[in-house]
Image (cartoon, rainbow, N blue to C red; front, side, top):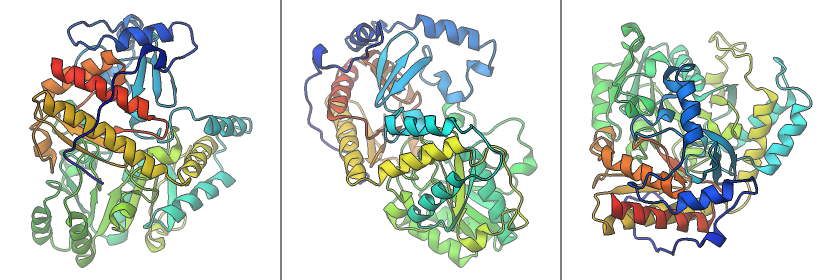
Length: 471
């Protein structure tokens, strides 16, 4: 269940002999070095190759990255350039080893580079990477998604969460005949023009309220409200009667930090949208198949009209999807007049990775395991923060979590912005030096996986305790 406080038990740091090793030359030695260097002041994390590669990248790529939050702008220091991943671990180009709590921003729910998924991908690869035509694998993954997600009777695969949200928004407008939408401050639904209004994720991390290059006309029909404020939503409906096509939200916010809905908030949204002939869209790109096999809508027992998905359903490959009631989805071309297309949509590699990832998640005990280890992690960090005298709060649901450097509670983006981001930056750097990789922003959720072990959690909590005492 979601929590905001907690007391965890603590174990001693793993001895060197028990620390996970890598047979590749140099990784073990680098791992021991970095994990003994917890002090922020020591700056003993060696990133010479990362620095060299990133310096070159800045001449080739805007800001040196292909997605803004990777640039470490809000935490400072040198971005990490990675070489390989496996299970709960990542290795950078300098040979440093980290326990990973980013999970490629969510997809790696069964762990990085899973052997069974990789084996299936190799077999699929032999047949080709893209057909640009139908393949059986699309049916197989579609059947799994439809069987799992309560709101989905038909699904359209795309290539990213941004595409999925763009498609769902266009479909909602086409189906209702209305143009206005309501989104929530701090919720991020990709970088499409209509959504870049009070957005979270990298926009929040870089301190940008919106983006240059977005025409006023593109956002003129976008209305915003604070997350968890149902009264603000009611006012928007009253002042825009018969004009609102959809309400879209992250049912659990992951792009302004980890923020859970207040009891009754999602139910109230469901009621008010039904009363007004407005579609309710759950953006489950992060929460889908992570909070429960049927997503947040299963976890909270609230069925939206449309759902957007991504991350987990591609098992680490680029993928997105949107789905909903048959009568709505049959408006999508070629069944209906609402046009949306994509050359690589439903490509066999992404479908294969998704199929085998979801198959793993149907095994008994998966979500109970995620809930247990994530609870230990969050409670351990919060307990360490309390003992060190820090104002902190946080929580988790299954394999998704977050902590804020503020006393809280955090119910919306304005609450999240009260966090001490400078302190978070020092914490982030200290954890890096200890061999723990966290999202490089106070305003991003963290993720655990089935590959994380109790020793991983014990080590992380002990590292956090030492770092929190020193910052």
